[in-house]
Length: 205
Image (cartoon, rainbow, N blue to C red):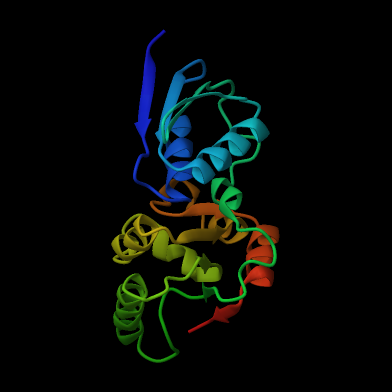
């Protein structure tokens, strides 16, 4: 049996989870997949994600590196919200913050100006110290992550730096964009509320 290898070494949560989910979405039932990870916490998060989706993996360790092997068993995931497995333990986010976006522009004036401000906001967030733990997108903000949006690149950069991008699933369905989402994870309102409850601060520009 051929095996797909996902190299998630050097990546911090949620990236290994997102890469694992992408490998599952891009493969057929019965495909063997191996995910290489060099972070124990990320390895355990990926393991939990796979177990909850009915695919208990075999994990091999070589020094500081882990190889998580499993076989895709179903066309759809039972627990598709991969980023939720990267939530920090309750009570450990006192000094953290999340950013919530409820629109695809910033402010209520000119749409053109609002788009420019959104571009600047995402670029500035990517350089912030510390970074937000999450960027939460709901209402028309989910359009920021859809195909054709000029802000996909900015969100991808945040994700590359370890920021969780969560999208309201109800909102994605409302705009009929489920097949067009190009960055982030489609999530539930329960998870979004849990993130906000655990955050030290919530920023809503």
